[in-house]
Length: 121
Image (cartoon, rainbow, N blue to C red; front, side, top):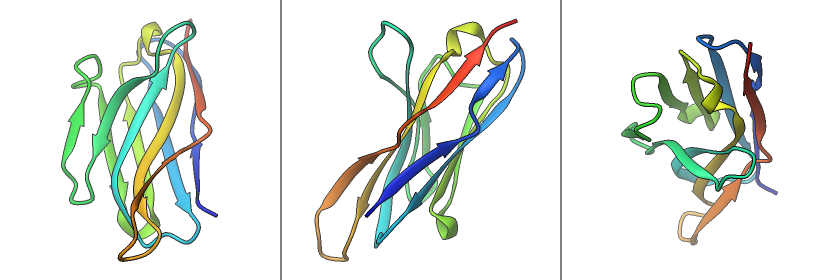
């Protein structure tokens, strides 16, 4: 049973920082790309940042220069360092990963349960 578990969300004032973590566990052979998405109330889920197994990164324009994505392949864990947070960053943040359960098997898409980030004074 594969699980993605996010942590690190919470309430922060505008201009503050938070660090989210996403830990993958279970019978995983390898993890390809990992991503962060977010969904604000009444809005569609949107891409925030992604990172390849080799460390290549990309970001949504709205978070460039403020958020940094990283991963520790040895721990099957991904991080999102969020600085200079704004009220419009308020959302549930979801972890996503494309991974293989066996070396020759297909790639599966998994999602975490989400962690709430609220930016408010």
